[in-house]
Image 1 (spheres, rainbow over the protein chains, first blue to last red):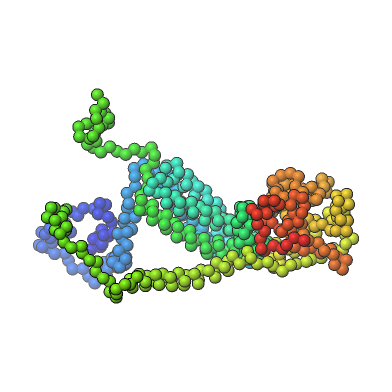
Image 2 (cartoon, helix red, strand yellow):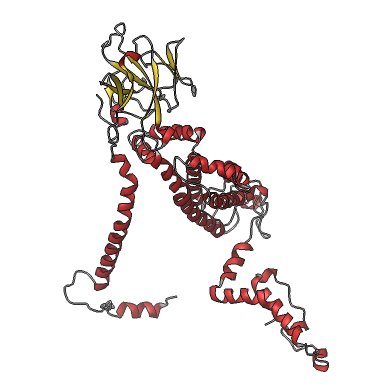
Length: 299
Length: 221
């Protein structure tokens, strides 16, 4: 199997270059000139070089043979999108990218951060002032959280105004709303972590807003604070929720969200109209009623 | 596709009996497979609960835990008068350094306001709107919150802005010539003590049920 053939396997049939008739031995006899003058035998080093060139494709083919991933990947990556798909359709991917930035910068911040009430602020100062590019990574995480929330709302607005939440995509809207709530919880729990004056009082206010819910609100406040007052365990609790509980839930739900997007396809923008089939009956004729369609002529 | 012959044959054939599963015996109420399915799912659920329930209990336990009652001396008796407040800072939550400290405004009971002149009153500076720190403004004789404009009178009763009840208070006792502050409690609009509520929660009347007292707080004096 030549390298080109293997590459061809990764490209779906409609996009594949048709084989040249006669050449490459595709569905026919070998070209006449090959019979009369066979190609020169390559030297040892040339053959090694050829093998080296094929190595990446061989590796991919090895994986593909064992996972059959190429079928799934080509189906997902080369899926058809409706006419009229435009830049507004990229807001979901943009949100996903913002999440990936948050996850990545968050992992590196966690390498220097100490979730302890007496050391949290000092560790953040250390990140901002001493660590190489620390202020940059912290800044990406801090501003990135706002970017993610803004992008989610823009994505939600696109979905709403394009009517993309309607049948059969309601469940994906519901998953999206849960993702929105989880992201807001993420922003809320992350706010406390620097443990400066702003963090502290913002969390006090935020927890008290949660507490104003009737009957269950007061208990929710106690749950969030791990006690009647904001204390040492509040910080570790928020830290655990922020970087262990919620990221896992968000990743799982993003998976479900994307699965449904691929499964159901995207919608055309509302200003696009379906093309009429070529042999469609003229509207006038339909209105008047024609023989055999069950409608009675009005005149 | 069924044709006439098929229908006829089907109608004439005796009703086909369902093959008996392995291990079938006369009079059984449940197949072996069904019994095993129920048993496996039950045991799986039991194993799952054994892991999940302790973890959830671990997370929600603080709701039902009440810390140790804590009293702290904030100054000699003579420091406090009936006509104005004295600001004191003491530790309300231990173990988190400065973040666990809170501010109280302490004075003696005022005869003009119908209070016991021997008693001490310690008003919390935590705004009952959303928990910002209020300040006693001497010139106005009011507590004023910087966040959303809540205003309270000299006794801590709300006179303006979004707060939902009077300012919280701390229990006060005297010991060895010192004024000591203890657990927090909330008050109704008539200044009757009730169990401590979080900011934003009404007190008194039906609100005692809509915002039930939390097990993590201390009984009122």
